[in-house]
Image (cartoon, rainbow, N blue to C red; front, side, top):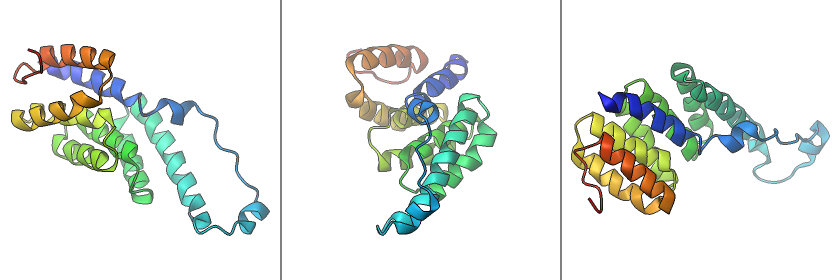
Length: 175
């Protein structure tokens, strides 16, 4: 099946939109213990959890990029436990489930990602693909129509050309 070869590549490529800054940026400078003790902001006690979530996200992202999805899933899950508003973690969790063929879990994670951030293109693309792969063409069509407006001109042309060849059951605008 053509979709089986193409889908992992497009989801991995889409995931790179979420990863580069996290994986290539230098780690933030840490405050020394006395500086941390002197912080009197309400969110100061959350810093260790945020650091843990960022570190886990980075490691999970590296595993994802290496196609080590089974190892990435528990780390993405932990990130979402620590930071339940991290849409990128949910999107990559969905991508991991998708890559392993667990489309139901993938759909749930992709939908949560979009609830948190309507601009995560990987989540829309994943919802198109996972719904199509589970023979829910109407749902795939719905997510495709939600994806198109957030794509730039070049992305739109590229994605629509690929989607039309890989998902013949979908009705693409202008076709």
